[in-house]
Length: 144
Image (cartoon, rainbow, N blue to C red):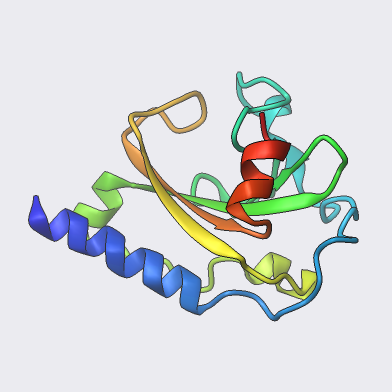
């Protein structure tokens, strides 16, 4: 059990370390890349997920992602990766996560790692690794 926590911590640090190049994201209201689809059109989830926003994903990258989360104003506010506990236990490598969004030039404010017991689209227990492009205060206000 302790090794699972260590793996999660290591993955969070690594995901933070490979954060995308710094850029001001206040004006980032661009649409998702053309190959990204609204998650609610792919699985039984609502268009808006409180705490995460409206999510888009390139179907070719499922289930890991990246998923792009937008607030009510159409601003990109987070990038999410979903990694199953089974993949951690099997020591699966995830190389080049996010390569398809590198050109967006994003600046990560902070990272959250959250356990999820499963949901439509990823029924097995997993962790959400969320790279936040906004502050925790903005997150609480904008993603109600």
